[in-house]
Amino acid sequence: MIKKLAILATLGFILAFTACKNTGQKSDDGKMYVVATTTMVHDLVKNIGGDRIKSDGLMGPGVDPHLYRASESDVSKLSNAEIIFYNGLHLEGKLVDVFDKMNRLGKNIYPVADTVKEDHLIPSADYASSYDPHIWFDINLWKKAAHFIADKLSKHDPENREYYQSNLKNYISEMDSVQKQINSLIDQVPKDKRILITAHDAFNYFGQAFGFEVVGLQGISTASEAGVKDVQNLADMIVKNKIGAIFIESSVPRRNIEALQEAVKSRGFDVKIGGELYSDALGTPGTEEGTYTGMFLHNVKTIVKALK
Ligand SMILES: [Zn+2]
Image (cartoon, rainbow, N blue to C red; front, side):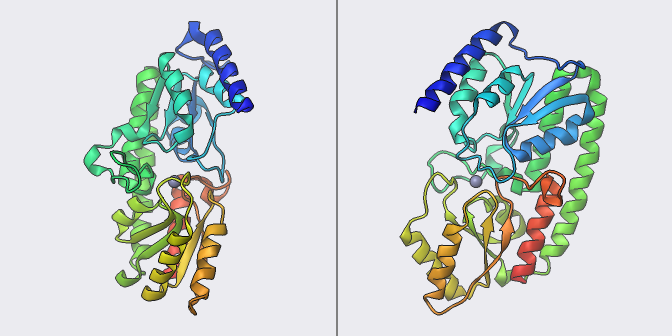
């Protein structure tokens, strides 16, 4: 609580301090300064903004956006940003107050999910009148997010419009090519084996796009804990359907999936842990999984290898 108060006090100070320059700052070399929340959104920003912008991401590898709270240095980055991009649809559930304050300051703050029409969103099973925020697992929706970011960068920095639009075009064709590779990998998994069980409900868009039944041990947000009953029910389902593998996630502690594996074992059946999937955060920068397209390929290879 004390820490929270301290952050709010700092926020108040920074907001007062920056109130006279709401549009944010250019960095020393005159580049627009852009801040993104999650690693996925930041990856898009970097692909499209290239070397004509300066950017920071608030969250790193292994960080769970559902539970993430802003640090003092985050608030200072957000206050200095000319543009802020976040995922939206309550993915960053604990940053709502900070986003509200940035809005009141007149900051250029954009949730990329705003670009997706409601009829393309999957309603949340856990929260009435809200939607599943994990839209990056449908590549077609993430292409819309890419267009959205290119348009906003162009709007605020029209001199570099052509550069951003050309980066967008290149990046969309990279996504097209990854989509083709993914489709041919997934063809190796028989239809009756397309059941994906993971630590939390991050893969509904993936399931919809590629014909998988998806079950998350925790709900749509990791803020709700998996109960003993969830574990027992899911263990019964695994035994009944003779499911070969379940998956841990890089941004969720592995203990719940291990408890599920134990519960299956106590029923006289063995389910293996098929590997680690990147759900709500990309991997370490510089590795294959450190980019959106590399992360997607890694996940699909891991799933296909374990379930085919
Ligand atoms: Zn999630």
